[in-house]
Each structure stands twice: as C-alpha cells, then as structure tokens.
Amino acid sequence: MEKRKFIGVSVPRKDGDDKVRGKLRYLDDRQSPDMLHAAVKTSPHAHALIKKINPKFALKATGVRAVLTGADIPGNIGIYLGDKPPLARNKVRHYGEPVAAVIADSLGEARAALPLIEIEYEPLDVVRSPSEALSKDAPLLHEEMETYNHIPPIIPEPGSNVANRTKIRKGNIEDGFQASETVFEDTFNFPPGDHVAMETRASTAEILDNGQVVIHSTTQAPFIVRSLLGAAFNMPIGKITVITGPLGGGFGGKAGIQLEALVYLLSKAVNGRPVKLVNSRENDLVFRRAAPASKRR
Picture 1 (cartoon, rainbow, N blue to C red):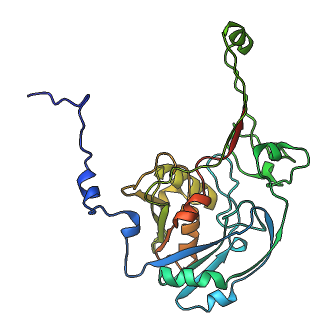
Picture 2: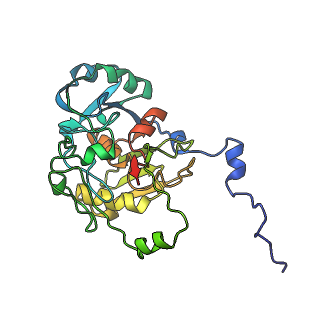
C-alpha cells in the first residue's frame, strides 16, 4: 500500500467543504419549537455601585418570560479565581459587564425589553491601567477577593488589586547583561484584546425532566465547563452534559468558562426550557476578553 504524504502538502480539512459552501450548522443555527431566547443588559460604567434595579416594566413586555439580575444569582465562577458573577451583583467592575438578562419567546422581544429595565448606578473611581491598580490609593475592584474560591497556585493579596503575584527566576540575569554587547530597556503597554473569532461566543441550556443539564456551547473546553458548573452549583458532573459543535474560530479565546453558567441559570428560571444566548459582536468583545491589558518593562 502506497504511503500518503502529508509533510509539505496542503491537506483539506474534513469540514472545509461544508464551511465554504455554507452548509455547516453552527450553534446559532440550532433551534427547537420550545426554545426561548435571551438578551443581556450591560453596564455603561467601568466601576459603579448598583443602587437599584427595577425589572417590572420589562416583565410586562410582549413575549417576556423572565428577567434575572445579580440578586437572583448567588456565588461567583471562574477557572483559576472565582471572581466572576454570572450577572453583576452589588456593583459593576468593567464597562459592558452583564447586569440583567431577559428571557423571551424571540430574540427581538428579548432585546426590545432591555431598555425597559431601570437601573440606578452610583459611579465610582476607575482603574485605568495596571500601574494605577497597584498604587496605594487605588480603588479596590474586589474588596473581598481573598474569600473567592481559587486554585492553590493563585494567592490573592487582601486589601489590594493583586489577584496573584508570580515570580519567575531562571538563570542569572546580571551575568546575562554583562555578557551582552548591547542592553536595551523600555516599557511597553499592551491594551486588552480578543481573538475576534468569526463566530461569537454562544450557548444553549436545558434541564431535562430527570434533572440532566444539557448544554451546547461554543467552548474549546467542555470538560472544564462541566467540572466548574458542578463545583459552582453543587451538582454531580454526571448530571451535566456539555456538547461542543463546530466552532467558527476559537484560538484559545473560547477556553475556560464563558456563557455556560448564565445560560444554565436562565434555563432554570423558566423551568428547564431550552434557552439560547448568543453574544453580539460588541458584547463578545467586552464580556470576557481573552487578553487583559498589561505593562511590561
């Protein structure tokens, strides 16, 4: 049998033909007769107290089945440091943070109800850079960060904005400088960024009559999603099914946990009916950016 050559040869992807012909079904193409749709209201402030949320007008809007706020959702979630409430609770910590969610019969009805949610904020001082975050008089973004669930290598520093301090020591840097013909030193600032995959982050969830939670998600890490959901909501992971379909790009930006916790809670709020939540492009860039800002010397 002749050996096929792959090194140095352009090998067509198995899903390539369906992708370029528009035949491939992505998560947002999934639909069922009883599926509901969700939309999220986000914060216009980078840092502010949430003084009051009034959802009563949104609840009366056409097609609306439920409205959730952070007050309805205890606890946080996160892969290394559990610092993310599915919906902001008591205060917002970045522009575009999800504050409330509407579940309706259609996406248009869910989006139409968002402006009807009345939210009163008290703006707080903001942190504009890593350097500002480290200053002694910087406003604290997470006042109780040391109480959050975190993995052992992550050690939050109480009373500061330092989530973890990592020291890397490899070789003798002074010897390296001495042996160098030229030493160049400067400071570089990098803004936050995201991979901007063509398919935005999306998720559906439903809870079956036997209690099984079934989640379809644009995740690159279904087993991590399952374990984090189990830990956050005290569920056996055997009762959670996470299904990943074809992805319209990921590049690491769809790892960890994204919308899955929120969409599970949305389904729970409507007695387990399937609920779909798909990020708009803007929300995809501000909800869960893949790369934080950094300053490097």
